Length: 149
Image 1: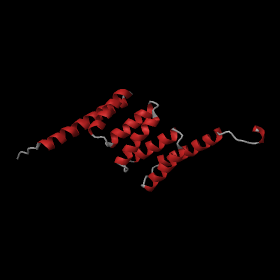
Image 2 (image 1 turned 90 degrees about the vertical axis):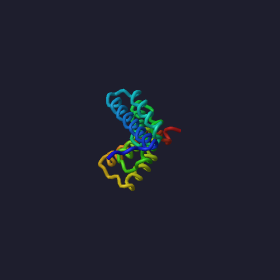
Image 3 (image 1 turned 30 degrees about the vertical axis):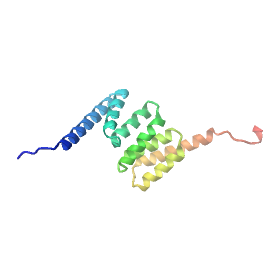
Image 4 (image 1 turned 180 degrees about the vertical axis):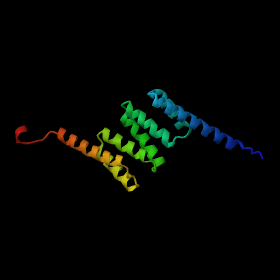
């Protein structure tokens, strides 16, 4: 028994193969600490499949790692919107928001994660981290009292 694929199915299969290969090469480069190369591979995936959750997430991770956290946020959000069932996407997005001092947003996303069914101990750790960030921000705020007038 032989099967023949029509051109559309062949093109789709080739595209999936390219996505898979680029993602694997990106992961390999990322694990080797070759961030620019990893970004290039992940961006290749996103050119073929803009909503690819793993590629979006991994671009966010790399950008956060290289100090471009603000740019990372949209990629984390894209990954989460593409597949909200993956708890790591929630964790990465919340962590990035917290690291950027966006604690109110981090709390909102944390509560959304809980409502969506996320339950890992990592969420509890992030919640503690958010509370610590809030305390640090509050401690850094100048107080106005009689001694400062």
